[in-house]
Image: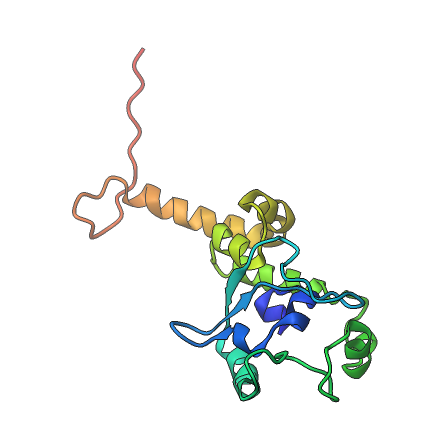
Length: 181
């Protein structure tokens, strides 16, 4: 869930049934946060509510949870209580499966998946709830590495190859102007 939505742990644990929208597209409306050991706050770390679209895999998990009251927490413990990070980590055997990673690293997983698959920086900024695209770029562009360079170069090469084509049917190589003395 966290690795596909980019939510912070506290945002996930504070989601209510009413925070799920199915139309016009499936999404979480993220407006609260409840970090483990703290009361649920009426705002996120970034201070502003945001809408995070849900891929089909997440929708399949969420839909069966929507038959409860609108104010009910969406994700709860086995006893129906609010999720707490330490209990959740124990139940999913986080120490065994995480290989030294933090739960917050799942947020980074989502962001790098989005960016490396062509979702633009401004959209990723909005989905993560960052204050600026510059912040998102500072944190994540190095993860894109050679893939981003190769993709950008391919796009630029295509522009250069088609720059002289007036019919739009085939690439025409650029010609250099003769030097004048």
